[in-house]
Length: 262
Image (cartoon, rainbow, N blue to C red; front, top):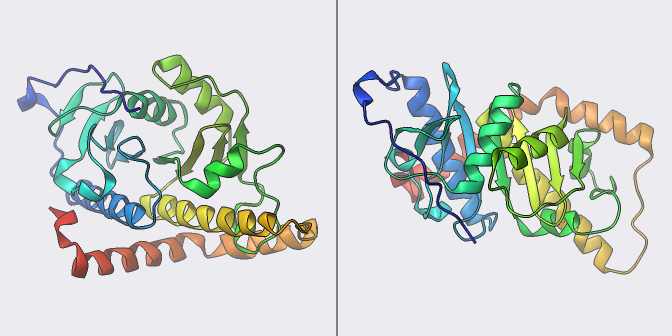
C-alpha cells in the first residue's frame, strides 16, 4: 500500500541550513515519542501513516518519517527533514509518497498547521466511512472537538500528486480535525504536544461512540448550548494540558523505550 517517493537528496549538504539547534532536536525527539506511543495505542497502519512538523526556525522545511519503517521502529535520528519540493535536506532515505504530497501541501498552504498527524486509526476511520457527520457530540471527550472538524467528502484515491494534497488542504479550511471520507483522519495543530493530545482523544471519542452505536440504542447528543460551553471549558486549558500529556508520554518512554531519543 505504501509508495516510495522518487525524490533527490541534497548532495551539496555543506550549504544546507543549520539544523543543530536545541529546538530542532527537541522537535525530533517529541515526534519520535509520538510515533512510539501511537504504535502502542494501535493508531498506525503498517508502514503507511505519517506525522510531520515544520522545522523550528525554518518554515520552508518539515520533519517527517521515512518510507519503510513502522512507527515503533522510529527514533529521532531516523526522521527526515524535507523541503516542499521533495528534497531530503537531512536524514537517510526518502518519505513515503503520499506523506510528501499531503504534508508538503498542508504546511505550504496552511501556515497555521505547524504539525500534521495523519492516521488510519480504527475507530475514527470507521466513523469516516459512515453516513452523516462523523461525531455525534454525545460523549464528553468528543466535545473537545466541537466546532473544530471538517469532512473531506471527495475521496479520490491515493494522494500521489501535488493536486491531491492541495485538495485535502482546501478541504481542511479552518478546521483542526479533518475526517477524510473512506480514508482516515488528519489532525492539524500549532505544536507537537497539541497534535498528539488531539489525536489521542479523537480516537478515544470515536471508540466510545462506536461502542454506543453498537448497542443498537439511540445515541443521544448533548444539548448544543451545553456542548458549546463544555468545548470552551476544555479549550481554555488545552495547550498546557497537551504539554503535560506529552511530558507524561516521554517519561514513560524514557524508562521503557529510551532509544526513541537517539
